[in-house]
Image (tube, one colour):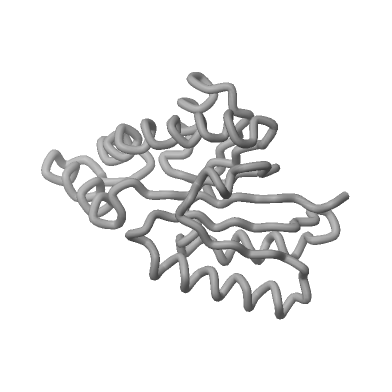
Length: 171
């Protein structure tokens, strides 16, 4: 086996080192050749910081893991075996709004359920469907592992409205 190519959409996330740690602990079962961390230009500093940490982690583990940073989602997706999504449309400012506005109605503010979760889903579903169109074009055999919250609603949208093979997880 030549090794796998994995693309992480939202690669500048603070959750990325946990993913990398998991991959590095399982190199015999999951031989990853290339790990592409994808983010948007506004996340440049986070992507570079996480990317440098990822490279140090791979080097320390002695893993021949090529880590690439990019803002070009299509380049990262081309030929990918797996795609992981963990992005937040609107950033932390949107999360703050999602968690606060329901409180005025005496409802818990939360990003995965209730009014806040629905608001996040409405912002996120168009973006994930766009990503899925690219997956269908650039890596149609890839599996999508969705960590993007609200994971249930987002994964349901993927499964109902695309041909992408997907599972959703929330850690």
